[in-house]
Image (cartoon, rainbow, N blue to C red; front, top):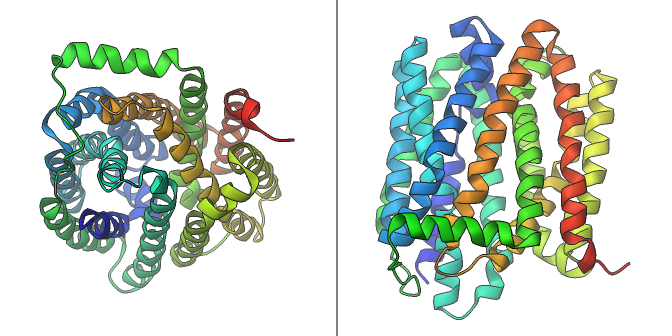
Length: 385
């Protein structure tokens, strides 16, 4: 069980992403274009997409621990490139390394948690622990945003990137201290056969197939909004206040993650994922259309809904994954999320350059709503109306 507190610690350290609230502004200042700044997010996602499947196989083949160590090291090196590089080519190198880190971690972290719980006879507690790790991640992001605001006032934007290296280095140490779950038996198939089997397992399962498509659309446009929102907010509030607002956003999301298990047990998977998600989407869209000083605060208040929904959806998918393909199946889902985000981030940056950040945010929010029919079809049979 020592893995559980280490997973908590690693999640918290990984969430101390101090540059996150202002990175799009920092990149746009250096590169002189929102489209170029958002293209770096696209490069990260293309890199992640290209490597999602082989890294998932690696996790199932050589184990959860060393896959996690590789992910932590790539994350540190990627941010190091951002810290020392003041030109596009070095930024691109950092973006590729961060994509590789995301590919190593995306399916592996949930597989490590699920396998650890299964080893001690408590796989049904995945939702609870996933909610707690998500809560820690959001809390860390909130603390990061608060720290970032102070650093920006004293040392400027570049210093936030340098400060991010400290928790990432500590995260490498935590990953090394993990123990491989004994329940994770190494796959005996060759890599290509295992990958083919995992892809088939995802697409022959109706629920997984629909949730994968829905997740890809929601993540592509939703994460593009999240990364770009600082550029939109700076037209409404002072730049130094964005970090504090992001801190409040993450704090409320952390609360949502923490109570997700209890809420879902009370209202069921369908209502926790679909109803709460749709309500949040409508409120987000209304807030953006208002485009006044109340907009950031309304969007922030709705972050608790995001925190409730995400671990509930992840728990549903973990229950559908098979033991021997768990990490690879997770990475198949992440592959489509990465491709979607790469395309959407480029699109949102282009819309912002051609029209305005306001139009870009409205467009991204409207298009993210295309995810909900897939989620409805996937979960509706389980609802109790």
